[in-house]
Length: 310
Image 1: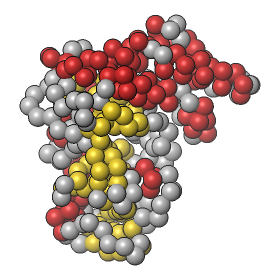
Image 2: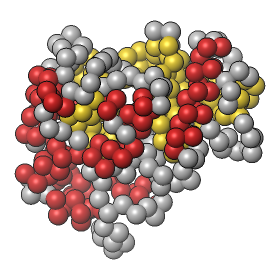
Image 3: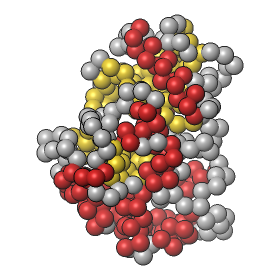
């Protein structure tokens, strides 16, 4: 079974009761990405387009930035991101370790977790959570950063949630992320990290949807990849998914690769995927890459990012 995130939270923004820096995903839009990162902003925009998401809350980048400031590491982070080809790998690793250790020990992560537990109604003691990255450079038009940052499963105890938040923050300065940026010659001089907190969910089927086929020029057709594994397993090449072309109307599908096992997808699910792709492509103005999953008989959008070449 696929394991991913999800949640439930209805009504208006919790910002007034949760305090500064914590906002429902449903209340975010594309322009929120500076403070809440591309992943969180994309989910909020999907909700605004009438698409089903698994609601949660986002902790803005100021929590992360305050943690760095408290440790006196803002300048070290800037040095970490500089494009100095002569900088020894040992120096880069030393900077990453120093920043990571400070973030893992930060009181700001503890404060953020305590505030979330106190103010978000669906966070309670018997609920498992998924804490996800939402970097300011992530899911942008320039680069996706797919698979570069952490997603951490934890309990809803404040101490566990704080550790998960800190681990997601720490993944923002991993050496592999710096290598990813350097190899793609991305214009990243710094990268702040917001965090998404959602209840953990199990999916019967999940996958990816591309509104532009990565290999073929096919007007009006999407490419869908589906598996009983999580979407990140498909992104990471850990599984071979079913692949099929889906007409943008959602009413026709053609197999490309049949994995040999059945999928828990019906005509209503295909129609939903067609809506996901069409609505988000129109809203963004260019092609998108969507992660989706099916839980309790309903297909929901898990993530939406622009299709990039990097």
